[in-house]
Every structure is written in structure tokens, then in C-alpha cells.
Length: 194
Image (cartoon, rainbow, N blue to C red; front, side, top):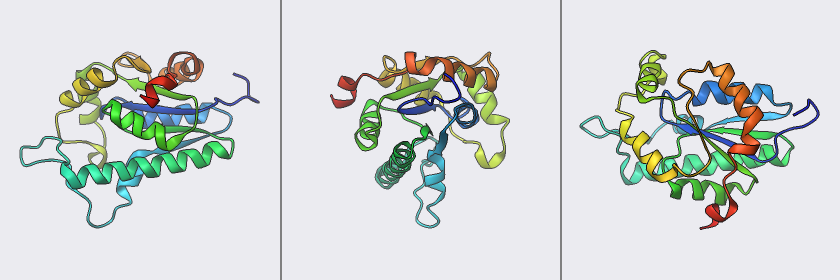
């Protein structure tokens, strides 16, 4: 990719908390000549009052009906902003948790930017847990990410590019994504429409 080129489509970076989504998506966007980072968490933070509790009494991720509705609203807003950037000639680098095939299809249906490239950052679980435990308290999650990791693998394991970034620096991971995503991460259109 030269300085005059940009990555066509939308790059969607996902993984469990602690996988490196925030750091890596920022670095990827910085490496592209025209890119915008679209952080899914920002759309949750925008809800000032009435935000659903996503954690149940046992400390497990369990958003319930209202939480699911708010998570879908986050996706709607993420897709709208990403599409706006794409239409203006910027590569959207979206950073959000995508757990299921249904969620991926929902995003693809709203986004309409193609190709849709899915990169699942999947360092070993102990690495993601360590990264989560050592980050700032306001960005740390307090639930076990193992069920999410298992469900992502079951639901999305045959789609996109599963990138084990456990032994890479964020910079190395970002460089690899910029160099290889257009070849390795494209989700087939037939899967997105199924």
C-alpha cells in the first residue's frame, strides 16, 4: 500500500476485553493514509442516564433485554458513523466486541461498506486477562472473558482473520493488519447475506 492508496472497505477489529482492540485499532488507523477509528465503546458512554447494567448479580456478563437493546443501538450508531467516514473517502477502522454471527450480519446489513474485513484479536486467554487486569480501572472489565472467547470461537471461528497477537507488540500487530487484512480478513458476501 502506498501513501496515495487507502484500504477499501471497512476494517472491523474485535476480540475479548484485553485482546488489544483499542490500542491496535488506533495504531492501524494511524498507519493508513486516510482512516478514522470508530470506537464502539464511545456510543455506550454517550448514554448518560438509563444505561442498562450488563453484569448480573453473580458478576457475569448478562445484559438482559434492555442491555441487548442498548448494545444494538451502539451497533447502529457505530455503523452509521463508519459509513459516513467511508462515504467521505476514509477507511473506517471499527473497534467493538462482536460475539455472534447474528451480530456480524446485523452490522453488515447496516454498514453496507464493502468489503467488510473482520480481524479477531485472539491472544491466549491468560494474556487477555493480564492485559485487562493491568489497564486503567475505568477501562477494566470485572467479569470473566472466557465464556465470551468460547462463544466468539464457536460463532465466528470460520470467518475473518483470527490473529494471535499474544507475542506481538501492538505496533507489530498493527503493521501486520495493514499489510495483510485486505487479503486475509474479508468476510464473503454470501455469509453476510445468509
